[in-house]
Length: 253
Image 1 (cartoon, rainbow, N blue to C red):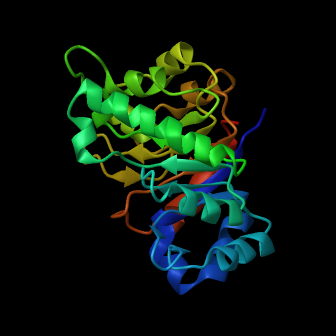
Image 2: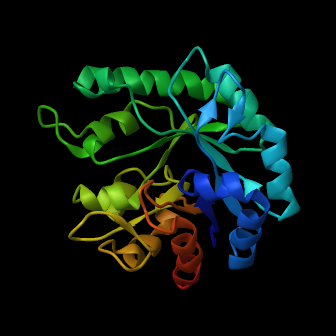
């Protein structure tokens, strides 16, 4: 199945704040059909400075769906997060990082997996699945065990999926296909992020060190549904790079 391709809106937060309509128009013309915001403000009930219904209207006006979003792992706030995610029409509630204290031991990662399961149960009542977005540190062994494996082994596949960031996997020296083979079908939403082999900064997709073609060839094994292009926060002209990346991605799917 050909996945839908989208853009990570946190990468575009500055231009989106200044020109929301024009930004969505450019994404739509480029061929993107889904987006993923981040930066939820729980006190103001906004995401990237927008009220959920306002952001959804802009997206809908350009035939774009808000398929997922990045949220903190917080059991107390999870119902509020899920309510906002449901208003936006999200299918996936993605946890973008763990609290530092949870990353220090195997038991910490097991506790994080337990929390992901609990949030997953809350999200399921809204028709949403919880996901987890990796960085590089989940692949630094703790007493001979890879933390990313702990998260996968101790989470319920019916409640928790994973969002592999292909840039961070490459940075950590990981072969995504090996992970897909070990945990087939658990990776329905990806982050496509390329990195310069020398500077390790984000670059346009296809111009860096990441071997996307072999990974994309195994998308069915992973269970891929949505491929989201991301640029690091300090990337120069992130919108231009995301727009130009769309043409390259089209050749892989």
